[in-house]
Image (cartoon, rainbow, N blue to C red; front, side, top):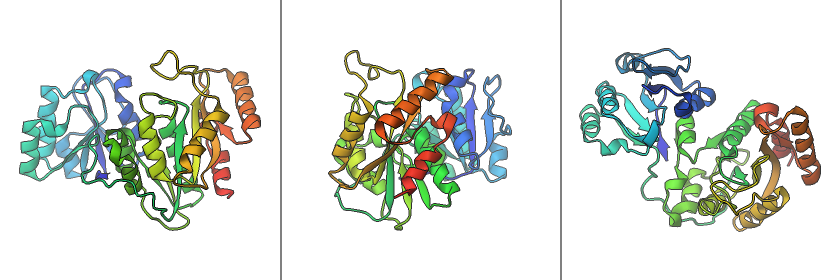
Length: 335
């Protein structure tokens, strides 16, 4: 697994548009204790409300890692960004990035990091020597968020449930499987970058044996119904061996993303399918609720739609952004 030392200096660079800073905003929302300052170049149009700081000052006050919190168009590193990141390395700061352009592909950065004993952490690179899946039953408890499609709130739901369990003093860890989740929690495995033969093994390694009352809440990826990304979902489902799943869904989405003929499934059908596939490695898998994105609906329509889902499925249904996840945490701890 990647392990990223906190606290962080969030690099915003010179971006002008908030939409390119989703990683930084996600970190500030879900890991405020890890985010101590922001690093903005002149004319930067984004402000997280954190103290502005240069790498030199950040190193002096004990900040450990510069995290690139933005994704500029093309996911590249301009010459100016490379120069500025070199200054951070010279000041003894690790650098973490989820960009498509790898830090380790920039010769000057590699040289600066080697000279000053700092790490370049490309979070989209999986760890070496991953095992194949064994199917061995592990101790502890696990919840996996799954979806009717991609981009339906699986990460947000997993983070919200983790927080809800923590507020109940339940031993819990969020297990990140994507770049933003890894940066939020400081550790994890980029499942979508793992060679297919090792997907389930990577999921097993991500969530090892634990105490009998400990929960791992695992961030889902892809969807069994998405023809492009179903493979990663299957490997993650089998390797996670979840005791519980939460189905995530966007109300109003009719077709699977980037397709013109694959319909979004019926929710009851989707739950049954996930449970059927999951039973290979955990015969006792169960669904404890549904989390929806209801942003396409007005207030009364939203309430009606959520009530109908609950009545049809006999499961708690919430929009975690509006309602929170307490009913799902209650269902999870009920058994």
